[in-house]
Structures are given as C-alpha cells and as structure tokens.
Amino acid sequence: MRLDRTLAIAKKNLKSLRRDRRTFAFIFMVPLMMMLVFGYTFGGDVKDIKVSIVNLDEGHANDSYAWSIIDELNASETVKITTIYTAADAGADPTGLVRGQVERGEVWAAIVFDNNFTQDAKANLFKLSHGQPFESSNFTVYLDATNPNVAVTVQGVLQKSLQTVLGDIAPIKTPLGITTEKVYGEDTKFIDFFAPGIMVLAGLLVTFILTIVAFVRERTTSTLERILTTPVTEGEVVGGYALSFALVTLAQSTVILVTAILLFNIQVEGSAILALFIIFLLGVGSMGMGLLFSAIAKNELQAVQFVPMVFIPSILLAGIFWPLEAVPEFLRPLSYLLPPTYAVDAARSVMIRGWGIEQVWVQIIVLALFALAMLFLSTLTLKRRK
Figure 1 (tube, rainbow, N blue to C red):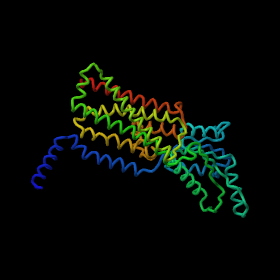
Figure 2 (cartoon, rainbow, N blue to C red; figure 1 turned 30 degrees about the horizontal axis):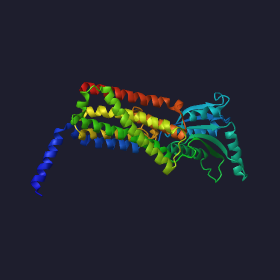
Figure 3 (cartoon, rainbow, N blue to C red; figure 1 turned 45 degrees about the vertical axis):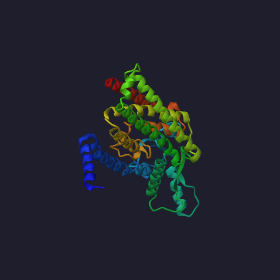
Figure 4 (cartoon, rainbow, N blue to C red; figure 1 turned 90 degrees about the vertical axis):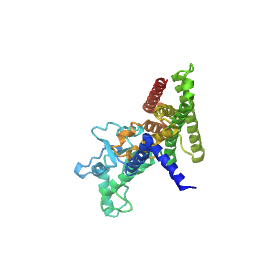
C-alpha cells in the first residue's frame, strides 16, 4: 500500500465533504446538538410534579402540622401544588374531589389531611413522651404510579417534608405517617412504562428512515419520475406509501407488544387495539415527514443525516424514557411541539391506566392532524416536483 495514494484518496474525500455544505455542517452541528440536549436533559432533576391538596385540619395555622408539611412542599422545587382546598371550599366529598383529579390525569398525586390531623399528632407526641402506645396520625396520598420515576420522587419528597417537620423526633414509630393509595399503577414495573415508549420510538424512526431513504433512491433512479408520468396522481402515490409503511409500523409495534406481554409480562389495562391505532397514526405522520425531508436531500447520505434531527429530540424530549418533568423547564415547551409526546402519553394511558378513547381523544386528534398535515404537504411536494 502506497502512502501517497492513500493520502490522495483521503484528500479527495475531504474536498467532497467541503463542497457538500449540508454534510459539512452535519459533521459539527449534530455532535453539538447531542451534547447540549443530552447534557441538559440528563443533568436535570424531576421538577414541577403537579400535586393537589385537601387540608381539613382544624389546627391553628401557626400550630398545624398539616400547614407545616404544606409549607415544606411549597419550598420544594420537586412538586408544584396546583390547588389547596380547605374545609370551606372542599365540598361534601373532598376526597372524591382530588382523587378525581388524579383519575383524570390532571395531577400526579393528591394529599388529604383529615380534620383531626394536628390534634391526633399532638396526642401521639404526649403518649410518645410518656412511653404510652399510640397509632400514628397519617395523611393520605392518592398517587398515579404509572410512571415509576415520578411515583418514587413524590414519595421521597413527602417523606423528606415529614421528617423536616418532625425535626429531632425520630423513633421507630413516629407520631405522623403517610398512607399511600395508588389510583393507577398498583403493580407497575419499569418495563410497563418502558414498552409503550419503545413502540412509539419504533413507529416514528423506522417509518421515517424507510420513507426518506426509499424516496431518495426512487428519485435518484428516476423511478418516481416515471411513476408520475402515468395516470397515477400525487395523492395516490403518497397514500400508497402511507398505507404500506404505516402497516409496517403496525406490524413492528405488534411484535414489540406481543413480545413484551409474553416474555416480560407487561400489563395492558386498556385496549391493545387502541394503543396500536395510536402508533399507526404516528407512523402515517412519520411517513409524510420522511417524504418532506427527502425533497431536501440530494442523495441517500444526505437523507440519513436527517435521522438524528428527528431521533435526538424525540428520544430526549418526548417522554419516551423519562417523564417530561425531568426535562429542563426552558426546553419543556419544545416537548409539546413533538408529535411523539402525544403518542407516548396516549399509549401509556391506554396500556397502564386503562383509559379509553374518551380520555385520549385530544392526543388522537393531535396525531391525526399531524398525519393529515404531513400527507397534504407531501402531496404538494410531489406536485411541485412534477
């Protein structure tokens, strides 16, 4: 092997990259984007977990264990108290009021302090100081445990707040305690949380990659131009691709779901068909997006360069592997601009919470609009090309 020939080939390749400005920018911008997004996402803690509270405690505000715990929660960046109901505005069924918020997915947890919370706690402290037996005065937490990370974080911050209020009192049996009732996710494992995200990721990326590579190849081989010279319309071409690749996505999602059920015993509380339909809608939209990107790419190399632009934001910001509450607050608005965010939320809600179409119709509409918009724009792209 001659060194001069090797250097000549290397020089030729570097010149080609320099002429291809899109590839040249890709080499430097993608690593930078990966480092920034990965760094901010992995460096962030779970924050702003929505919690509602019913405080029926009759203890004086300055001498109330319930208000002391609430003050500790307010001082924490981990939870975000959306509403505090007192005896005056909680209504006839305060427990049902806040439990319903958890059931509807409006908050991750609801805390209820009963009317004798402080009084019972003080009585327990007296018994504790005199060595008498007692039962801890507990407040109740209704918890949405469909996301194990969020559930563990909520329980941790509540326990920390309780310990802060108790101060130096740390016997084996304390005068205050927590009773947790899981509204959803009683037996949820991490694989139950993980599987819907993998289904969404497969539905997004595989369809996008297949579409963008296939269209670029058909364009470079003039196959697409020959098809467009026939009576076939642009809409029919887009529809055919959408149907075929969406079916591929559906088949892959089915394989993932069946494998997860048979090998890992994941729970599917709701309709598996509805969950797969959600992935199908995302696949159709991904196909249209792939067609749009293929119009920009001149060859397959440039086409593949768009994959990280879709993959990295989706995997980090759409809640596939960790909750949106772990995404830095300044990046969180971007999460709600990503269609996979709605697909992940809907698929998890169906599979873990057992929700039906009446609870996830908003996410379905967003995904349907995304699919229709991508198909429409794809058709316009083909018309312009023709």
